[in-house]
Image 1 (cartoon, rainbow, N blue to C red):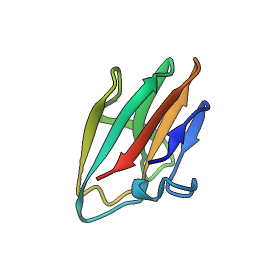
Image 2: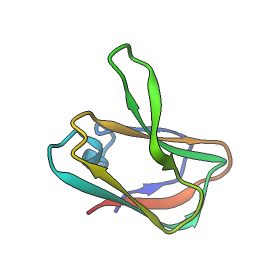
Image 3: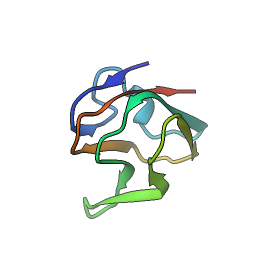
Image 4: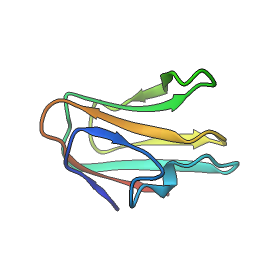
Length: 91
């Protein structure tokens, strides 16, 4: 269960966040514990290289979960502002 303790963008290439890679399987991201940043979103990148928030991708309270239903593209967790301190795990 990796912790997020800094603002930034977390991808499947970030150690511990491999669960953000694309998959033909249904996956769930579990967000728990701690302090939310100013903005926390789960996004994907389109074919033109532009990031877009997933429907329901804005996380506004902890704990919560998000189901990724066979999303073949990798997703990113984008953390901006504040002093984040929470964890994310894949289920």
